[in-house]
Length: 244
Image 1 (cartoon, rainbow, N blue to C red):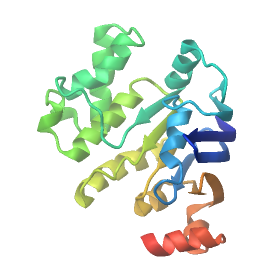
Image 2: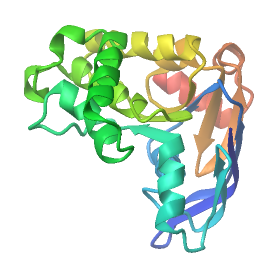
Image 3: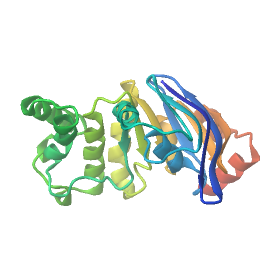
Image 4: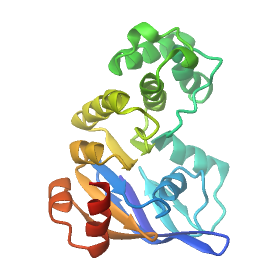
């Protein structure tokens, strides 16, 4: 489903990704953890072509782009259709209702009929527990509710994989549980997900595999029970001792 080979990215003179490799199977949930500045969010942004990698190769759902080479708009479009993105700060359209936010992609990107787009949007709102909030603007919703709308909006595009950048970090502890619940449900349903998070509880709950990224490289990876209970790499041990 996802293959990342020797991915590199430099900002100015600072290397952020220094040769990241990853293979992720369909239906697997992979969670990236690591200290701030280690390259986690940059990796996600490269996968979704919000950043252009300097080298390496990315393949998602059979679509491949090469780092350091010109990527056509159609290649970007095909990659983004396969990989839906959920951001830390929600990025909802503030002038549109929850229902309209979810309908936007199916209507204007997938060119679905309005009746079909609205039916799908209502179905997804119910899935994330917000059916009764369809006509609410983002400003009328809590942070947890807004993030659930953002997840539903990404799912409306029928992606093969969901990329999530710190999906709970902007939320109060009580609201995090709302989003954790939705992500747990998606994992149980077999949705392929790749998450970046500092939320160790979420990582423990949802991950099939946890990857510790340090200094732009994969330092260690494994099942959450193994990695959290008995990390092998000294940097993983140091990081987990700090975050608890």
